[in-house]
Length: 67
Image 1 (cartoon, rainbow, N blue to C red):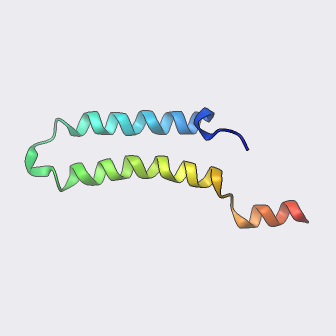
Image 2: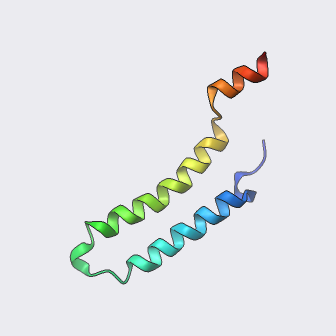
């Protein structure tokens, strides 16, 4: 299995998450638990989905390899 950190999609996802965190630092403190939190969770979610897709491929794809 290859290292997912070498994938371009992973690297771009990390860049996106970092940019989201940087942008949300400028938001008003009244939004700390609102839009700021949602945007940061979304940025991290993208990263986690990429890892999950790499570590646990679609079960249908595994079956196709066996046939």
